[in-house]
Length: 290
Image (cartoon, rainbow, N blue to C red; front, side, top):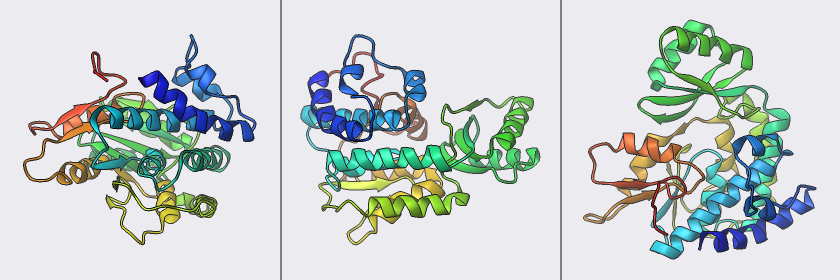
Protein backbone atom coordinates (compact mmCIF):
# COMPACT_ATOMS: atom_id res chain seq x y z
CA UNK A 1 0.00 0.00 0.00
CA UNK A 2 2.76 2.43 0.94
CA UNK A 3 4.42 2.32 -2.50
CA UNK A 4 1.07 2.89 -4.20
CA UNK A 5 0.25 5.87 -2.00
CA UNK A 6 3.73 7.30 -2.47
CA UNK A 7 3.34 7.02 -6.23
CA UNK A 8 0.02 8.87 -6.03
CA UNK A 9 1.46 11.66 -3.89
CA UNK A 10 4.54 12.20 -6.04
CA UNK A 11 2.39 12.16 -9.17
CA UNK A 12 1.18 15.52 -7.81
CA UNK A 13 4.55 16.67 -6.44
CA UNK A 14 6.73 15.89 -9.47
CA UNK A 15 5.14 18.44 -11.85
CA UNK A 16 6.08 21.11 -9.28
CA UNK A 17 9.66 19.82 -9.30
CA UNK A 18 9.75 19.72 -13.11
CA UNK A 19 8.51 23.32 -13.45
CA UNK A 20 11.41 24.42 -11.23
CA UNK A 21 14.06 22.53 -13.16
CA UNK A 22 14.46 19.76 -10.60
CA UNK A 23 14.64 16.02 -11.31
CA UNK A 24 11.51 13.93 -11.01
CA UNK A 25 11.48 12.45 -7.51
CA UNK A 26 9.24 9.39 -7.87
CA UNK A 27 11.70 7.35 -9.99
CA UNK A 28 14.49 8.11 -7.49
CA UNK A 29 12.52 7.54 -4.29
CA UNK A 30 10.73 4.43 -5.56
CA UNK A 31 13.72 3.04 -7.46
CA UNK A 32 16.13 0.28 -6.45
CA UNK A 33 18.53 2.69 -4.68
CA UNK A 34 16.46 5.37 -2.90
CA UNK A 35 18.36 8.35 -1.49
CA UNK A 36 19.36 8.76 2.13
CA UNK A 37 19.54 12.05 4.01
CA UNK A 38 23.08 12.77 2.81
CA UNK A 39 22.06 12.22 -0.82
CA UNK A 40 19.15 14.62 -0.44
CA UNK A 41 21.37 17.22 1.21
CA UNK A 42 23.71 17.12 -1.79
CA UNK A 43 20.87 17.43 -4.32
CA UNK A 44 19.84 20.77 -5.89
CA UNK A 45 18.00 23.26 -3.70
CA UNK A 46 14.38 22.22 -3.28
CA UNK A 47 14.83 18.48 -3.76
CA UNK A 48 15.13 17.70 -0.04
CA UNK A 49 12.16 19.94 0.81
CA UNK A 50 9.93 18.34 -1.84
CA UNK A 51 11.02 14.84 -0.84
CA UNK A 52 10.31 15.45 2.86
CA UNK A 53 7.01 17.16 2.11
CA UNK A 54 5.91 14.29 -0.14
CA UNK A 55 7.03 11.67 2.38
CA UNK A 56 4.96 13.32 5.12
CA UNK A 57 1.88 13.41 2.88
CA UNK A 58 2.48 9.78 1.92
CA UNK A 59 2.52 8.64 5.55
CA UNK A 60 -0.52 10.78 6.34
CA UNK A 61 -2.56 9.33 3.45
CA UNK A 62 -1.49 5.76 4.19
CA UNK A 63 -2.36 6.14 7.89
CA UNK A 64 -5.72 7.66 6.94
CA UNK A 65 -6.45 4.64 4.73
CA UNK A 66 -5.43 2.22 7.46
CA UNK A 67 -6.97 3.88 10.53
CA UNK A 68 -9.35 6.54 9.24
CA UNK A 69 -8.90 10.32 9.12
CA UNK A 70 -7.09 11.92 12.05
CA UNK A 71 -8.77 14.06 14.68
CA UNK A 72 -5.85 16.49 14.50
CA UNK A 73 -2.51 16.96 12.76
CA UNK A 74 0.51 18.59 14.35
CA UNK A 75 2.89 20.88 12.46
CA UNK A 76 6.47 21.12 13.74
CA UNK A 77 8.68 23.63 11.91
CA UNK A 78 8.89 22.74 8.18
CA UNK A 79 6.23 20.09 8.82
CA UNK A 80 3.62 22.80 9.30
CA UNK A 81 3.30 23.05 5.50
CA UNK A 82 2.56 19.33 5.22
CA UNK A 83 0.16 19.51 8.19
CA UNK A 84 -1.87 22.28 6.56
CA UNK A 85 -1.88 20.34 3.28
CA UNK A 86 -3.00 17.17 5.06
CA UNK A 87 -5.89 19.15 6.52
CA UNK A 88 -6.92 20.43 3.09
CA UNK A 89 -5.93 24.07 3.59
CA UNK A 90 -3.69 23.70 0.52
CA UNK A 91 -3.84 21.04 -2.18
CA UNK A 92 -0.73 18.93 -2.77
CA UNK A 93 0.70 20.96 -5.69
CA UNK A 94 0.21 24.17 -3.70
CA UNK A 95 1.83 22.69 -0.60
CA UNK A 96 4.74 21.39 -2.69
CA UNK A 97 5.26 24.80 -4.27
CA UNK A 98 5.24 26.46 -0.84
CA UNK A 99 7.74 23.87 0.45
CA UNK A 100 10.02 24.61 -2.51
CA UNK A 101 9.74 28.37 -1.92
CA UNK A 102 10.69 27.95 1.73
CA UNK A 103 13.70 25.85 0.76
CA UNK A 104 14.77 28.55 -1.71
CA UNK A 105 14.52 31.30 0.90
CA UNK A 106 16.27 29.28 3.61
CA UNK A 107 19.22 28.31 1.47
CA UNK A 108 19.64 31.66 -0.29
CA UNK A 109 19.19 34.18 2.51
CA UNK A 110 19.22 32.55 5.96
CA UNK A 111 22.92 32.23 6.85
CA UNK A 112 24.05 30.25 9.85
CA UNK A 113 23.24 26.81 11.13
CA UNK A 114 21.41 24.67 13.67
CA UNK A 115 22.85 22.49 16.44
CA UNK A 116 21.10 19.76 18.41
CA UNK A 117 21.93 19.78 22.14
CA UNK A 118 21.27 16.98 24.61
CA UNK A 119 19.91 19.27 27.31
CA UNK A 120 16.84 21.32 28.14
CA UNK A 121 16.30 24.92 27.11
CA UNK A 122 17.39 26.48 30.42
CA UNK A 123 20.73 24.63 30.33
CA UNK A 124 21.10 25.49 26.64
CA UNK A 125 20.61 29.20 27.30
CA UNK A 126 23.19 29.07 30.09
CA UNK A 127 25.65 27.31 27.82
CA UNK A 128 25.06 29.83 25.01
CA UNK A 129 25.70 32.70 27.43
CA UNK A 130 28.84 31.09 28.81
CA UNK A 131 30.16 30.47 25.28
CA UNK A 132 29.55 34.07 24.21
CA UNK A 133 26.98 33.12 21.61
CA UNK A 134 25.25 36.49 21.60
CA UNK A 135 23.33 35.76 18.41
CA UNK A 136 22.52 32.13 19.20
CA UNK A 137 18.94 31.40 20.29
CA UNK A 138 16.93 28.34 21.27
CA UNK A 139 15.15 27.44 18.03
CA UNK A 140 13.28 24.26 18.98
CA UNK A 141 12.44 22.71 22.33
CA UNK A 142 12.16 19.02 21.48
CA UNK A 143 11.60 17.62 24.98
CA UNK A 144 12.86 18.35 28.51
CA UNK A 145 16.26 16.85 27.68
CA UNK A 146 16.78 18.02 24.10
CA UNK A 147 16.67 21.24 22.13
CA UNK A 148 18.05 22.89 18.99
CA UNK A 149 19.90 26.21 18.88
CA UNK A 150 20.19 28.48 15.87
CA UNK A 151 22.68 31.18 14.90
CA UNK A 152 25.94 32.09 13.19
CA UNK A 153 28.22 29.13 12.52
CA UNK A 154 31.23 30.55 14.38
CA UNK A 155 29.14 31.07 17.51
CA UNK A 156 27.59 27.61 17.19
CA UNK A 157 31.11 26.15 17.19
CA UNK A 158 31.79 27.85 20.52
CA UNK A 159 28.54 26.50 21.95
CA UNK A 160 29.41 23.00 20.73
CA UNK A 161 32.85 23.23 22.38
CA UNK A 162 31.23 24.36 25.61
CA UNK A 163 28.82 21.43 25.40
CA UNK A 164 31.70 18.97 24.91
CA UNK A 165 33.55 20.44 27.90
CA UNK A 166 30.53 19.85 30.14
CA UNK A 167 29.71 16.38 28.82
CA UNK A 168 26.58 17.42 26.92
CA UNK A 169 26.05 15.81 23.52
CA UNK A 170 25.81 18.09 20.52
CA UNK A 171 25.43 17.57 16.78
CA UNK A 172 25.36 20.09 13.95
CA UNK A 173 22.32 19.44 11.78
CA UNK A 174 23.04 18.79 8.09
CA UNK A 175 21.22 21.96 7.07
CA UNK A 176 23.11 24.90 5.51
CA UNK A 177 20.94 27.59 7.05
CA UNK A 178 19.53 28.97 10.28
CA UNK A 179 15.83 29.10 11.15
CA UNK A 180 13.52 29.93 14.04
CA UNK A 181 15.63 33.04 14.60
CA UNK A 182 14.36 36.57 15.33
CA UNK A 183 16.91 38.06 12.89
CA UNK A 184 15.03 36.49 9.96
CA UNK A 185 12.16 38.97 9.92
CA UNK A 186 12.80 40.11 6.34
CA UNK A 187 12.91 36.52 5.10
CA UNK A 188 9.71 35.74 7.00
CA UNK A 189 7.93 38.65 5.31
CA UNK A 190 9.17 37.49 1.89
CA UNK A 191 7.88 33.98 2.60
CA UNK A 192 4.49 35.28 3.79
CA UNK A 193 4.10 37.23 0.53
CA UNK A 194 4.89 34.07 -1.45
CA UNK A 195 2.31 32.02 0.47
CA UNK A 196 -0.34 34.71 -0.17
CA UNK A 197 -0.33 33.67 -3.83
CA UNK A 198 -2.10 30.44 -2.90
CA UNK A 199 -5.77 30.48 -1.82
CA UNK A 200 -6.65 28.57 1.32
CA UNK A 201 -9.56 26.25 2.02
CA UNK A 202 -11.29 25.37 5.32
CA UNK A 203 -9.53 22.77 7.47
CA UNK A 204 -10.87 19.22 7.41
CA UNK A 205 -9.41 18.58 10.88
CA UNK A 206 -7.66 20.53 13.61
CA UNK A 207 -4.13 21.76 12.82
CA UNK A 208 -1.94 22.23 15.90
CA UNK A 209 1.13 24.43 15.59
CA UNK A 210 4.30 23.84 17.60
CA UNK A 211 5.41 27.40 16.79
CA UNK A 212 2.17 29.21 17.67
CA UNK A 213 1.64 26.74 20.54
CA UNK A 214 -2.08 26.65 19.77
CA UNK A 215 -4.45 25.35 17.09
CA UNK A 216 -5.13 27.26 13.91
CA UNK A 217 -8.51 28.95 14.17
CA UNK A 218 -10.91 30.42 11.58
CA UNK A 219 -9.75 33.87 10.58
CA UNK A 220 -6.06 33.11 11.14
CA UNK A 221 -3.70 34.77 8.68
CA UNK A 222 -2.28 31.48 7.41
CA UNK A 223 0.63 32.97 5.41
CA UNK A 224 1.74 35.04 8.41
CA UNK A 225 1.41 32.07 10.72
CA UNK A 226 3.53 29.91 8.41
CA UNK A 227 6.11 32.68 8.16
CA UNK A 228 6.31 32.76 11.96
CA UNK A 229 8.15 29.44 11.70
CA UNK A 230 11.18 31.36 10.43
CA UNK A 231 11.41 33.68 13.44
CA UNK A 232 9.71 32.00 16.42
CA UNK A 233 10.86 28.89 18.31
CA UNK A 234 9.00 25.59 18.06
CA UNK A 235 7.86 23.84 21.25
CA UNK A 236 7.25 20.13 20.75
CA UNK A 237 6.10 19.53 24.39
CA UNK A 238 3.34 22.12 23.92
CA UNK A 239 2.32 20.56 20.61
CA UNK A 240 2.18 17.10 22.18
CA UNK A 241 0.07 18.46 25.04
CA UNK A 242 -2.29 20.03 22.51
CA UNK A 243 -2.55 16.73 20.63
CA UNK A 244 -3.28 14.61 23.68
CA UNK A 245 -5.67 17.24 25.07
CA UNK A 246 -7.58 17.22 21.80
CA UNK A 247 -8.92 13.72 22.53
CA UNK A 248 -12.38 13.24 23.95
CA UNK A 249 -12.71 11.87 27.51
CA UNK A 250 -12.06 8.14 27.49
CA UNK A 251 -10.84 8.18 23.89
CA UNK A 252 -7.76 6.09 23.16
CA UNK A 253 -4.91 8.40 22.18
CA UNK A 254 -2.51 7.30 19.45
CA UNK A 255 0.15 9.57 17.98
CA UNK A 256 1.86 8.82 14.67
CA UNK A 257 4.94 10.51 13.26
CA UNK A 258 4.20 11.37 9.64
CA UNK A 259 7.80 11.52 8.49
CA UNK A 260 10.79 9.47 7.45
CA UNK A 261 12.36 8.88 10.84
CA UNK A 262 11.54 8.53 14.51
CA UNK A 263 13.03 11.64 16.15
CA UNK A 264 9.70 13.27 16.93
CA UNK A 265 8.26 9.97 18.12
CA UNK A 266 11.21 9.60 20.51
CA UNK A 267 10.59 13.14 21.80
CA UNK A 268 6.90 12.40 22.30
CA UNK A 269 7.66 9.17 24.18
CA UNK A 270 9.94 11.03 26.58
CA UNK A 271 7.39 13.80 27.04
CA UNK A 272 4.57 11.31 27.67
CA UNK A 273 6.51 8.83 29.80
CA UNK A 274 4.11 7.19 32.24
CA UNK A 275 1.02 8.25 30.25
CA UNK A 276 -1.30 5.72 28.58
CA UNK A 277 -0.62 7.10 25.10
CA UNK A 278 0.84 5.04 22.26
CA UNK A 279 3.35 6.68 19.94
CA UNK A 280 4.34 5.21 16.57
CA UNK A 281 6.95 6.06 13.93
CA UNK A 282 5.53 3.99 11.04
CA UNK A 283 8.52 4.23 8.71
CA UNK A 284 11.03 3.43 11.47
CA UNK A 285 9.29 1.09 13.92
CA UNK A 286 10.07 -2.56 13.09
CA UNK A 287 6.97 -4.57 12.43
CA UNK A 288 4.58 -1.64 12.08
CA UNK A 289 1.49 -2.99 10.32
CA UNK A 290 -0.05 -1.02 7.51
